[in-house]
Image (cartoon, rainbow, N blue to C red; front, side, top):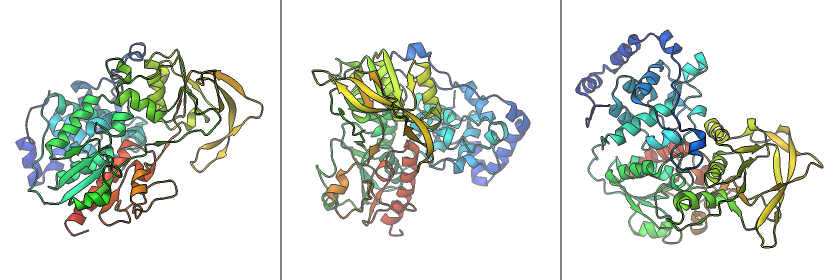
Length: 500
């Protein structure tokens, strides 16, 4: 497939140095006229059959082959004013990485990605490109069908990994500055990678026994295999990042304790791991999980491989997942794979208002997931052993839009009905981790428990302390957390150099 090289080809490197990169791009454009590019169909992502994949935890999407990726890359118009770059929270040079794929320079494409994105294999799998870079793609504006930017990102980074040609940039001499990253989720990992490449001494403190945060405990194996995450973590270690696991900042040590150890700058990326509940009667019955607990047991602790991994989870025969986001989709598709006869989404709005990715909803429908729209539970009913056996639900109708811009669900009087269930997963959002705020009283916390920051710099009210991701935003996406982290890393570097 791609040439195994540790740097850009001499020809392309010389062109870049001499300022001829635009000339090279023009030649690429001439090779296929724009009108022909616009007629090319989007290459379909190969995926496993639904009736096969809904019984195991192997990855659903199989990835583009080299020929398919090159064809898809040829659809890119290499616009003079590429809106896709502005639509990417981490500012990837999308046209260049795609043109490199078109030219067959797969490993070089991966290196271009890693200039601004330390986790491209992950982003290529779980980021909602359809609402970000692909949404504003100029080809979509012209034809209605954008370039498959996410699929190409996954392709380039997967080729680099599978060919064992992972490029490690040269790290400058140590600056002597020590930086503490609190939380090994996507935001923390991004800051760690960016600052390690600047020569700073980076330590990531993580409460769990594996790095990754929501990437490891929240996203199922069939969407993000752990081997992909392991490879990205290994890349960061090769950059010189140190990981200290089973370390709960705020309990094992506080920010003040870490300052005493010589750390000069801090990034708080401890996420939004506090689950929200319905607060309706019966919610404490056995068999009612938060999505956090359910997915952590299955994903991080491998309950799906019991008894080889000794963390059981009740599989459930009739499973209801409450919510309409990506976490709800992950939960209900997990329940189906664990053998549920009925695995259903119960959502109080209509399909149009669902925040989950279109691809995830489509895959769920293919796999036999039921959807109960405009429905909300009002109480849970237990048996003599205090285990959930049913829930009373109420039909809804949509009224005027609320603060989210979505139409507000309004109860229909007298529409109550009973739904039999033996397992319920509550997936209606999370709140920021409260521990840092509780143990660092001088840190400014918002009314929803979020760490307050200056959005231009991601700086908190404490000198040298920055924050980003879900601890700031509440539940958001992986790529938005990484975007926060990129801003924070730049500002932290300035701060450490005395120019901030």
